[in-house]
Amino acid sequence: MQVRDDMGLPLSHYFIYTGHNSYLTGNQLSSGCSEVPIAKALLDGVRVIELDLWPNAAKDDVEVLHGRTWTSPVELGRCLDAIKEHAFVSSPYPVILTLEDHLTPHLQAKVAKMIKETFGDTLHLSESETMTEFPSPEDLKGKIIVSTKPPKEYLQTKSNKEESQNGDTEEDSVWGEEIPDNKALMDVGREVSDQDTKRYVKEEEDMEKLAQVGVNMEYKRLIAISLTRRKHDMDEDLKVDPNKVSRMSLGETAYEKATTTHGAKIIKFTQKNLLRIFPRTTRITSSNYNPLMGWRYGAQMVAANMQGHGRKLWLTQGMFRANGGCGYVKKPNFLMNCDKMFDPRSNLPVKTMLKVKRKTFNIYQPKTATQMQCSCFVRLAIVTLSL
Image 1 (tube, helix red, strand yellow):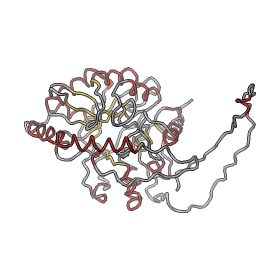
Image 2 (cartoon, one colour):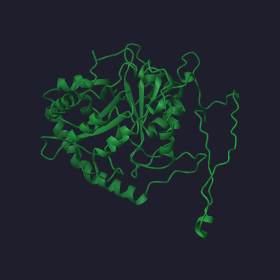
Image 3 (cartoon, helix red, strand yellow):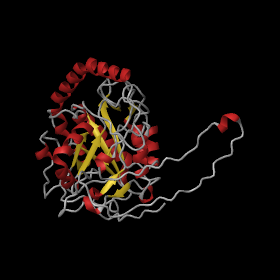
Image 4 (cartoon, one colour):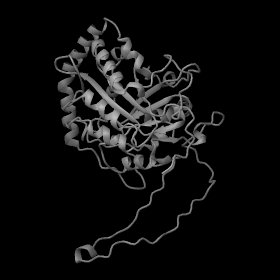
């Protein structure tokens, strides 16, 4: 397949193939952590990899794992090596490495050294702390970009993943309902979270005291795309700064609520800035939400649990087979039109009629009585950005 989109526009003009908790091998609660799913995601064309960084038990090294769960850790070095080896096998366009770190400055310094030594010249370092416009995928070919919060902000706010994620509803679709999460597993997940909360709170309080020594500047210099600290006021969060671009991250539930009250502001925000949506915490079995709810309003990084399964993930995978499977798909022009803001909820007049011709398929000839009982058919679903 061939890349057909103009790749010379700022990053905010593209939907980007994004993974969530890229290191997990299965469910979000008790599966193993490994570099293998990271390599597989990159080979499949995923361009945004997420790593959660935690101190080990001795507080002298860094591990990658899903915090406050029973997931077994993997060494950070193995994850970085996998990214280096597989980053540009399926696509030459940039890989964005999003870090959620829970580290003290001396461990941040260790991470900075590991990242610089592993990625070398492929690591993109921004010339200044602020940008008025993102560079293009073409400008960043063959580069790895680090995106996270400035270090001190991790000590001033809880992780976005700890926001309330209750009250989500599954959206019905033409291809049927998604497989629900296992209720028993979700109950266990809540039990583990309750048991470990006090221990983790104490650990983070201890790290906060240590961090008062100062922020590691080498780590801070690695951050080419800053993640903005949310004010938890959607009007303030979605304000567009003409002199600065940034990335914001919203949980599935918070985002869905925002689309009902701030839909136009989300579209305007994503015309210049990056917005990442991540699955709610109760998706213990690594299920996924309908990605269309993110794409309809211009969200570039609609994060999916690649270690999951089901129709919602198929939709994401299908979307990014477009444009040569390079992991970047240019947003439609109507989402970038500043003069006339697109409203996904409005009833628009029909402009084009799509006709689908029925075609006969040759399916294998049944040879046994059991095979003859099989009912073979093709189901076609057409999805659009409008509601």
